[in-house]
Image 1 (tube, rainbow, N blue to C red):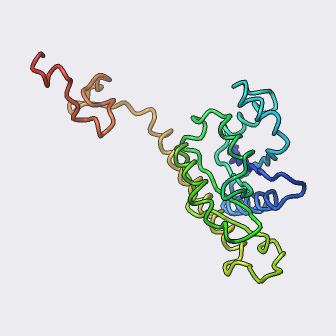
Image 2 (image 1 turned 90 degrees about the vertical axis):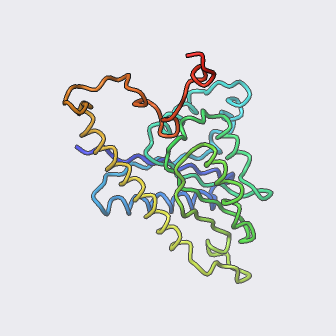
Image 3 (image 1 turned 120 degrees about the vertical axis):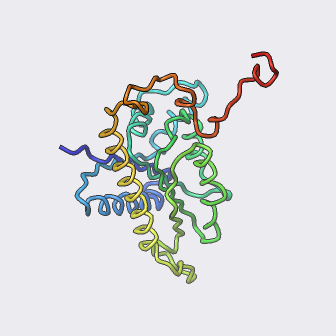
Amino acid sequence: MTEPIRIVALAAGLSTPSSTRMLADQLSRAARLELERTGAVVDVQTVELRELAHDITDAMLTRFTGERLGVVVESIRTADAVIAVTPVFNVGPSGLFKSFFDAMDIEIWKDKPVLLGATAGTPRHSLVIDYAIRPMFAYLKSQIVPTSVFAAAADFGADTEGQADALPPSSRIRRAAAELAMMLRTAGAAAEAEAQSGGDTATTADGSPAESGTAGSELDAEFANFVPMGQLLGRD
């Protein structure tokens, strides 16, 4: 039986209900539909960070992850992808959103596909993802979905001043979901190919097994021409 694709959706909204949760639900629903269209089984877990506010604060102060927060951290660690959505305050992500990532081990984000979303009352904050949120995930070495989704109040039907975006949120959501699905399918195909070739033993030109200590075999390409310092100084 095929393992389900696990997606964790993080919503950092501070109210109930919140437009941030609504956007997180729309993104996760679109991603599920896009993946299921190709026959995949998808498991989506939505986490409201406001329910973990005290746990996040305690983790930042004590550097100890409590039981409830630990369950969420483990879910993210084993997830195939994460959808992260935050409201915008003072031209940046909410303090709750940032504190959550500050309290976590940054290593769990390495190579993790992440779809970014943000909400605000006005379209004037539409660039906040690119200049305040995306750089953080680049630092965490996540695989960021190219298309991010920003939604203002007008995008949720409160267009009292005619400020709705020319491109409907549904179009951006579908495009972002399609890109996330493509990233997951590509990663799955690569992992399957690696698993199939994992049993192959490297050999030399004469067919004998290659030694693991062969020069350069365990070095990254950028270090292939590494010369020991002793040799450079003429001591070797």
